[in-house]
Image (tube, rainbow, N blue to C red; front, side, top):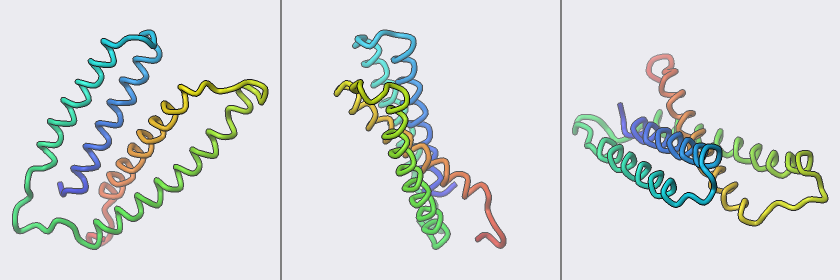
Length: 142
């Protein structure tokens, strides 16, 4: 497993964990629970720290850090994430008009949560695209 795959697994795991903590906090527990916020933060930091130790482990000296295939996969993942980001932003602008109508307002406190959710989802998409591309392989290692 090369460095890009380790980074993608790290991003995927942390993103899924953050989404689960956010979902659990918003549905099961009330919104004013500082104990769950602290627990979620400690869980994410603990998992991130342990995964960073795995991620930072050096490869053997015989292996290169990245080659042309790694750069191509990273570029394709960035393009896919960029396209997904714009589709997500357009959906976020259009869907609330149908759900709450044009007469109602969105509370200001929701906007940072929306941006945080967009960041997590884009990281999830980027990591998934990288892992799918490495999993697909190709002809002759391309």
